[in-house]
Image (spheres, rainbow, N blue to C red):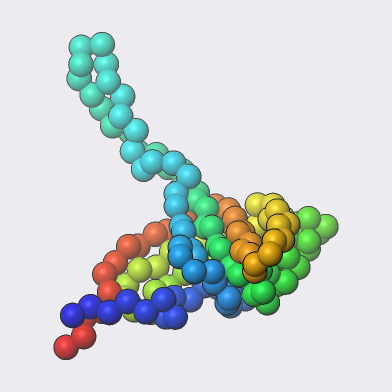
Length: 142
C-alpha cells in the first residue's frame, strides 16, 4: 500500500525553508509552454518541433499566519530594490519521488493584500528560468 503524507513535502526558496501551507493545493509547479509544438501543412501532413523554453512557475499558497510570508516578502523587497532576489528553488515530496527544481527563481510580484472575517491565504508566484519537474509515485509500505 502506498502512503502520501503532505507533511513530508518540503520547499526551499533561495535557501529558505517554507512552512505554513494552506489546506488544499499548496504547491503547484507548471511549465510556461508545451514541450512540443505541432505544425500541420496544407497537405495534412504534420511535423513536431521541440520547444527549448523550459521556464516555469511555482505557485505557493500559505496561510496568512505563516512566518514564511515575511521571508518571501523580504526577498521580494530586496529584489525590487537591489535586483538580488534570484535563488534556487526545490520542491521535494518525501513520501515518494516527485521533485521540482530550478537554479534561478524569483518572486514575480507582491501578492494582493486581503483580510476578512476568517484567516485567509496568501499566494506567491515564483518564476523560474528553467523548471525541472519529475512526477513520481509514493513510497510503497511493505
